[in-house]
Length: 133
Image (tube, rainbow, N blue to C red):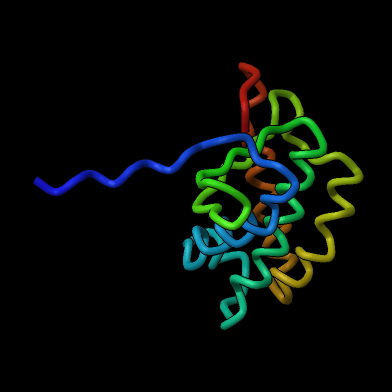
């Protein structure tokens, strides 16, 4: 009988994990229909998206959020989850400013479409009950 693969260790992320988080999230969403709709396709999408997700991870690590990683260390991040704490899902001014440069690089000519889509999604965010987002 073949042995079952060992599930990865899931642990709270550290600052050292941020590059791996960016890469894992970018690879996970490469080709995703929603991301493909709001971001122009290109051969370097993963590199551009990596920078975007790194900023998101840093913001949640430094603020009101939780970042979990699957893997045994910073060189072995196989997956990640970036969570905003209840009642803190809207970005702070600092977070909004920090995400501008990677957003411009990621969304390029689709930036207006991305802003429109993300604004619509934000308006649909349920206010109650308090929850992690």
